[in-house]
Structure formats: structure tokens, C-alpha cells
Length: 64
Image (tube, rainbow, N blue to C red; front, side, top):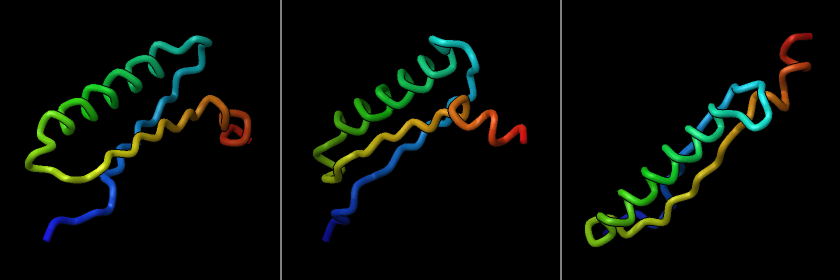
């Protein structure tokens, strides 16, 4: 029996600029991983969830 819980991909971006090249890289890596998993779908019958966490939004709190 195959697992039905989704695979979870979490990418952490710590870029401070807007737009952030680090965020762009995180998005591209997550998308490429999701596409690769979808290509192997016949061996992997699980959904894939992607979440990107931006540390920039938390920078002030982290610094304090």
C-alpha cells in the first residue's frame, strides 16, 4: 500500500532585497523538484506541497 500523505518541500529564503535573487532561486529549485517528482508519478502516487519561508519578513524580529 502506498502512502497518501503529500510530500512536503520547504525552501527557506533569506534574501533582503526586493525582488530577491535568493527567493527566485528557491522558487526555481522547488519547481524543478516538483516537476521531477511529477515525472516519476507512476512510481510515486503522492501529491507534492511546496512552501517558501521568507526570513526577510522576520528580519526585524530576529535582530531584536
